[in-house]
Length: 344
Image (cartoon, rainbow, N blue to C red):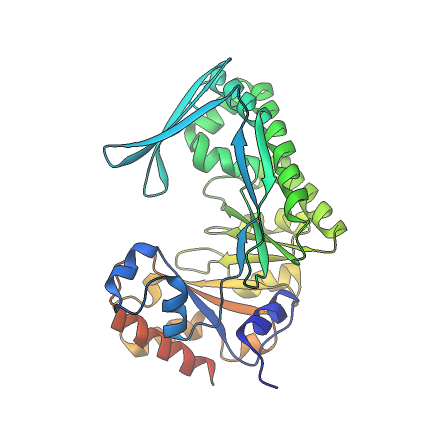
């Protein structure tokens, strides 16, 4: 009986290797405009290119604020403006292309307002879509949420040094909400929980990861395991010095391990640390294929992924566009090269 793409990915999450090289394309949906008319969304492009990765997770919960926290959002100067008004103060942020250009938190007093908002946020379980899914997604952990979306790097560490207690109290409240979300998504009859951490030592040192992130993630992982489910974390960038601490969290797989020259972590190093049955989605970034000839692309593939190595370990090749404007025909050529490489 022929194995389906869905079965192949299920097999991957169980820690099993594959006869074929599993791969998919990860990119910003705005590039769909460069594709033929019959391609309307990511699913169409994935099918057209022959990606082996179907849609695999969905958002398992939705949230709203109670009557004491008023929220509104609107667009101004090509930016999404978010505003919160509460009895203890107000916050606002501005976002462009899904990234903050003005962070929510500027002062210690803002931390107390955000803490109030989390305390007055109501969380509900979403309806499960009809099509099959491999996983349910969660938001980032408190540290990464603050670093990436609420404070930014400089403000996070400045406020942490200025008033450690206030920032830790905020993170404790955020973690309580995160565990509430975790409990909700574990109610689905779906085996995998996905969390988009974006972990990298560009933002957090091994020492701070051990102090803050490790306990937060481990608490989630322990709970998820108690429900006979697995947890996969997205990480992108520099992981080499974080791997020992990440292992202690007990997670079951990493999405987007990035080898040199962009990252600092070889796939083999992750397998050596976590074991050969640890599922890895490994990044093949645009610097390794965009505007390169076929010989160079194959050379780069061979460097990061020795031929046939996916037949010994659970592996998926994650091809990223990283914001470049790739022509459709270039993507078709890349897909052919990957298929031929994976058939060796």
